[in-house]
Length: 341
Image (tube, rainbow, N blue to C red; front, side, top):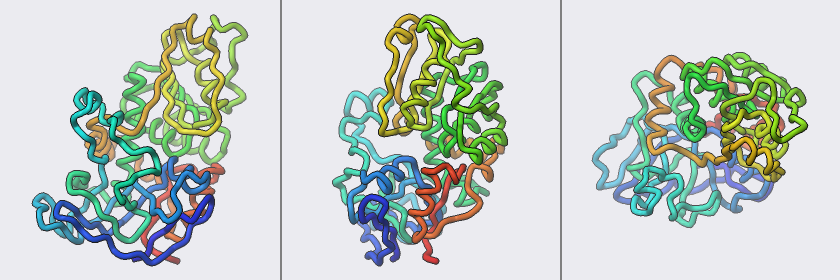
């Protein structure tokens, strides 16, 4: 099979690799679409990835073979990749927070021989698949993973219909967060974004758009802006964006760090103390994030077509798509398809 293989920072090569061999509880998928995640940008562009690895975890596909002990899946089933199996025994798994499992792997450092879906085929444990809802395209189904990430950010911030929400960064996760807020009936969603294409997408999704320069920081840490927010979802991973988001909150407001970045922010501890602000992270998914994401994608409440770039990218253009996302030239989710042009 063909696969896009990391060689080093900003170096990807399409190589022939063996089709994965199945264990008794494994399922082999012919990959349909695989989205590029923000973590993939770090893996591909910043050197986080291990040379020789095949990444890609936002995928949909069709079952082409099953292991001897697999009973739930059949050849021809359309599925999406779900969350990795956690231990189920640690304090976090027992509390319904499997994203914090003490035995999880670090990003890009799995020692399990995992191979991702930037390839023609991928092997998946049978417990880590979800059935595609009837009538949903495989292309739309590949949005389930990033939408589950966005929904986890909303959960961590306690976003509800009456919330006033600020989204920093209208990249793919920011856009999905906006769409999810609107679908939940949040009437006031404001997006801060410098890139014109992403600003246009955020407006099309129903948000009010401002530039980062329009978000001012009050002179006193005790003061708040004239129209503060209940929740700020920081989806850019930019240190300055994180600092700015904190300054836009009302008293007792919540900043949710959704985007991962390299630049560390400098938070004003007096602002946090005097206004009793909460800063929290959102790592991957709620325990039921994937079923809720698929349900929302099938509900008709989400503009699914707007959330994916019109052009699909072949394996040999993975680096081009990653650079386009990093530079803000691509606004929506970029999908890799298993062909070579």
